[in-house]
Image (cartoon, rainbow, N blue to C red; front, side):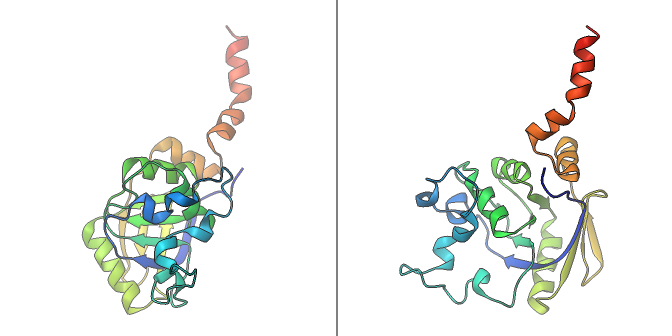
Length: 195
């Protein structure tokens, strides 16, 4: 069982780039491992470090100005290959929410399966959020899963977001697919006994 997801209030890490694909999120050379741990070290590896492994100072994850468990990304986040390792890296780094105006479908589902909430917002809301963070890096965002709302606390503006009801329940209860099925064991056994 994972940590239950209800409401998160956090500062944000802005990544105002469009069309960030899964090879940029986690380069293919790091896909050899089968355990989910340690992938966060190589999140955005080729943007975070130079060829000698030194941190690239002006990349946002290396900038102490920005922190938090919410990644705010440009349109079309997670395109490219369907590698689940990209979601592993995002989660292992410590992000609980990724906000964008559009996600590639497979990546969006991979995030949900790995206890990262992908929140789709309108283009104007995303632009305002980037502006608020640029003005004040301590800007906080509230993501309320029960009410399916996201609020920019700098401006007070909110939007509703969609989520599959089953995935919402899994996040809310901290259950992956197997744990969800096991939680229904008594119901399944009762149904079988009645047949």
